[in-house]
Image (cartoon, rainbow, N blue to C red):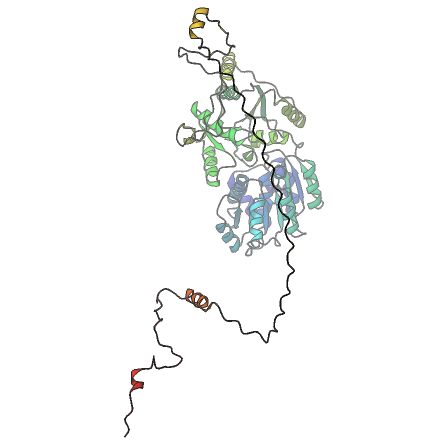
Amino acid sequence: MQFSELGLSPRTLEAVTAAGYTTPTPIQAEAIPPALQRRDVMGLAQTGSGKTAAFVLPMLSLLEKGRARARMPRTLILEPTRELADQVREAFETLGKLHNLSVALLIGGVAFEPQALKIDRGADVVIATPGRLLDHFERGKLLLNGIDMLVIDEADRMLDMGFIPDIERICKLLPFTRQTMFFSATMPPEIQRLTTAFLHNPVRVEVSRPSSTAETITQMLVKVPHEQKGKREALRQLLKTQTNVKNGIIFANRKTTVALLEKSLAVHGFNVGALHGDMDQSARLKTLAGFRNNEITFLIASDVAARGLDIPEVSHVFNFDVPTHAEDYVHRIGRTGRAGREGAAFTLVTKEEAKYWKGIEQLIKKEVPYFELSAEAEAAIETRGAEPDRPRRDGGRGDREGRGGNRRGRERDHRPREVKDHGERASMEPAVRVERPAVEAEATAPAPRAERPARTERPERAPRPERAERPERSERAERTERPARAPAAAQQPRQDKAPREREQRADRGRTDRHPQRDVSDAPDHHSFTEHNMPAFLTRSVKAE
């Protein structure tokens, strides 16, 4: 079957031919015709089977009619990771060169305002992660009542990352008459419930059995010791045996393990780069660009990069840790063997991780053989694993002893300390009493005390004379009654006994800035007498 038989528009077929595609993949051949008929589609296919073009191509044909309006996009594509959202944008740029469509990328880790300006101008297609899309909607920068087509990609990864509540909220904000396309590599029960709630009579496109791996991928197991040093040495020995590695991805379960592996492999001369969720968007894009351009041979990544890395020519995948979720294994090894190419996947397994591997074999329904390393490699792994770990150093000024040293968090050394011999040593045994010779004892014995004279008895005291009896008191004379007080009206007015005290209290309230003058000899200001009469008043008046 050719692309021309799928019902795509002439402009879209021209763009497909210019991109170098000739034959559609099975998922593309079965999903594009019902999508062009505006029916809901539920696609189940392996990772790397061409699901992106299965919804991009019909979307380009349907968007040729109509135009975008400010803050009201026409189509919406939801992706779980920033990398996958950016790769879908690149697919629109490659396949939509002749359509002149406006595409807005709404992802975290970049500035908010440029994205809002692009929406204000009008976007035909919005490619977003759920969190950033809801941020724009809650700020009033985006209206979702004009969406005609909704695409939910990597739905099982949305479930693992906890985006299902956001997906349900977004679906309730969209028009009921929209077209929905749903793609996933696995089908857990929660995803089945989501499809039943938001898809209306969908066309089920199942290219391969869910949770299956591609037949073009060679899968192998490698037994490794539990010690981290021995496990890292086993990874290095395994990388040396693979001489046909073009580029490979090394997956780890934790971000700290990613950083440790990057440092360890770089010290031993491997060309490596790291990719995990704590990196900012610019650093992640720079690392991915270097890996695509073959500037980085081995990319060490966490599961955040397991979904969304669309690099066709990845030749090898190495699982340093067995994934705890069996579905993650399908997505990890799906980074290689894409579009019919051959690939190899190696998984390092310890005794503690054997239970997780049993769950993976039950999911993929396939028994994976073991890869045997050489005897020299096994000896190197055993020697490296037997080495003791270096004592951990917290680093910084806090480890210095002395002034300013921060000894908090240090463990006390319980080892027995050496006791220096200074010539004298205290004994914990009970002391033994040694008897001295008689001569020495007599010489050192104290002189006997002289006998005290006998005490003479004191004479008895004479008896005290008896006290004479006191004479009896004479009876008191009867009290005479006091005369009754005169009535209040007859009493004389009480004379103020303390005029001086009132004057003193009044003087306390005055300030000390103007000391009071002595007015003891001042004339009385109430009336004049012959003693204080002014001189001009005592003059005689001459008769006229």
